[in-house]
Image (cartoon, rainbow, N blue to C red; front, side, top):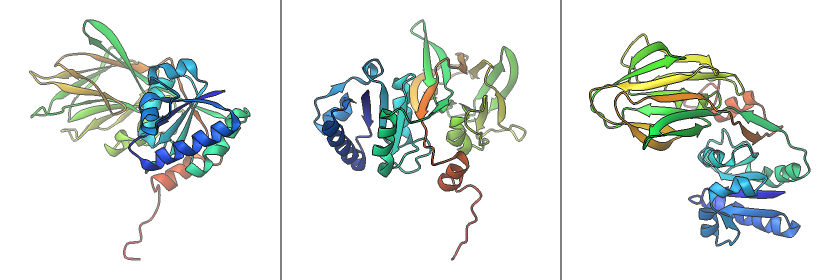
Length: 285
């Protein structure tokens, strides 16, 4: 088995962990390769462009936070990803630094289990061609620097859902329901639920609420505005500026993301420990 390794090179702890992992792999003659930027930072020769890793490797190791894992997921395709948390929240990166070597051994021995996660696919015309962008968490259209409140028009399977006057629109998977969508007032949705959630950002309408829809729906969104440009982001990565009336189509991707599961944790525990779900705050004690 050959591992692809992606490191958050801005975190010294992640770099130290990568050095430890290299020594451990070398002692056991286990094949590995780093994505190019990580290899350059660590001064390691075994490297490939990140776009090549899924064709050369059997599994991915993400050393960083949730952002590093999201970045890795865009290139892993269907290969399993081991997420090692070297960040702060660590909601998607299920394994601690102390658990890293143990879970890699389980993967090598075929003793690990996989969580399949749904992705979104956003389609838009760029240079007269349709481009497709994947997102594990969310697809977001924002007003950006537009000085007024634009109107976002949303259709489901060609039928008008509503027109939202808001600062933006978030379309999130169940995985992404605990990210930007939750911060904007959206509901928490259990993983593997076959739904999307559409959450307006700061709506200028008292009656607007997030809506949960079946994941077999095709969502069409455009901005009804006389002028301006509106950022399209997928998992926090800028994709393009949208012109008024320019259509974005969002639907379920045919490709799943496969995350190596931490069997010692469950989703309810993650909500309690990571998001402080249901915890009382005893101020002044």
